Structure formats: C-alpha cells, structure tokens
Amino acid sequence: MKRLSYLFALFACFLVACNKEKTIQPQQTPVNDDTELSTSALADEPVAPYTVRTIAGKFDESGKVNGPGPQARFYKPHGIFVNGDGSLYIADFFNGAIRKISIYNKVSTVELPPEYSQGGLLPEAVTLDPGGTIHIVSTAYGVRIYNKDRGINIVSRIGNADSNLDMERDSESTMWFVNDNSLCKIVKRVITRNVVNFSDYLDQYETLRGIGVGPKGVKYVSTATKLFKVSADGQITRLYPQQRFIFISGIAVSKDGNTLYIADGNAIKKIDNSGISTITGPYGNDGRDGVGREADVVAANLAISNSGKALFVTDTRNTIRKITLP
Image (cartoon, rainbow, N blue to C red; front, side, top):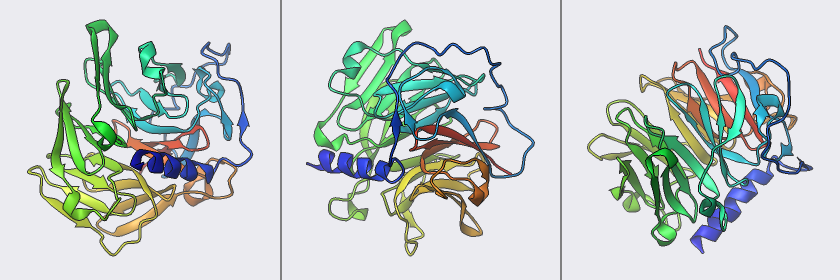
C-alpha cells in the first residue's frame, strides 16, 4: 500500500507540468541527423550565472528516441548522475530505462538484462562506479547492480521497505541510497541497509526521498518537507526546521560542501550561509530557456558537474537542462 501511495504521489507531481503532452512512438534506433554534435552543451560556458539551457529532449514530448540531444526523447526522467568523464546517466522513469548523454551530447540507451524490464523497472536513480558497474535504485523493484563485461548481475529487494528514491556516489565510490526510513550503502557490490535509521525523526507514513553527498563523509537527506544533515559518524541534525519546504525531490552538494542545491516544489533552490534563495523554477509552462527566474524549469532531480560550474537537471516535461553556476 505504501509503494502504491508513493507511485500515485509521484505521478501526481509529474502531472503538474504535463497537461496536453504530445507523445511520439518509442523507438530504440538512433535518429539520423547530420548536425554537428555540440561539445558545449555539457561543457562549461562563459555565460551569465544561472543561465538555463535545454541540452536534450523536447518540451512536452515523450518518447524513447536516441540521437543528438535535441532529437532525443525521454519519458519523465528523474535521477541524474555525472560520470567521471563528464557524461550523464539518466534514470528515465516511465521508459523503464537508463539513458546516457555523452560529452558530445549524444543520447543512447544503456543495455540492461531483458528481465530488468519485465514488470517494469521504474528507475529512480542511477550511479556508476569507476569500473563502469551500474547501480540502480527502483521503487518497488529494489537495488540492481549490473556490469555485463564483468558478469555482474545482482538484484536485491526487501519488501516494501525498498521504496528506494535516490542515490549518490561519494568520493570513495561508496553508493549511498535511501529507502523508507534509513540511509543505506553499497560498497564493492555489498549492500548494507539501515546504516543510519531515521525512524525517530519521521512522522507516521513519512519516508525519506532525497540524498546529496558532500565532502568529509557528510550526507544530506530529505523527506518531502524535511531536510537533515548526517555527519560522518552518523549523527543526524535537522536543518531549517521552521522552513516550509514544498516537496523536496533532489539534493546536490557543491564540491566544497558550503552550498546545497535542492529541487523543491519543482524549483531549484540554493542554500548557503546567507539563507535559502530560488535560482529558477516553474514560469509560464512553456519550457523556455533564459537566465534565472526568467526560464521555465520544472525540476525533478539534479547533479553538479565535475568542475562544479554547472547543475544538470531533469525536467519533468521530458527534457534535460543545464544551469551555469557562478
């Protein structure tokens, strides 16, 4: 029942921005396009801070199309991960797929075992280790760890407790993920649940939803409306208890650990020593690019580039956005 309630809530959140959505038929074959692929789409750019650019997908069109970024199609992308080479990996939720965006802004679909799609994968988040092993957390379908070349194929699920909603990789290549009421980890394919338990901090029926990893072993974890800091030794501190968060669906931490970026109520908010401010968010429902609040962004999740100079954002209207940071 809890899993079904979550899926309903997630779907309702997506509906905020998907009225009159146009749908094209899914296809696996790349789009034939002779346009030169842009390396600037994922690279740092000398533009105004908080400039928003759509790098892949098309506003309000769903599908499963590979090819150059603007020609590619997604269907409610959620989790996003920046790999060591700068490429992006996307948990393409309703397509039940993991998508890759190369540094040349070319989109492809990652090959997964056929059984992953049986009954629906519904991936919430994805990470990779330095050896290329894929880690997926999937609501209702648990943890998947896969590397075809190394013969790795692990599936692990413990009842409804594995309503896994987010995952991040730290500097030691430990994968941290949240399930209903605890922080969990994966080290060299060994899954350890209940590393830090949040039961005493949660209301009835409240569950964990987001995680961001900072330096020195610090993690940031959220429910829909609460934000917590977890020290390296597992001490939990609630942050901004008086703040009325709307619906936190993603967390990213700056390289120095001094700034948090969260997707809250589909807006991107910045949290630092000066307080909480909104960088960009929903505005006009037309998917426009622009600077800061002049752009229209309906964020699901986010990740910081390796340089720390950009945020990559999954937009619920089936696009991938880049936001330049100061």
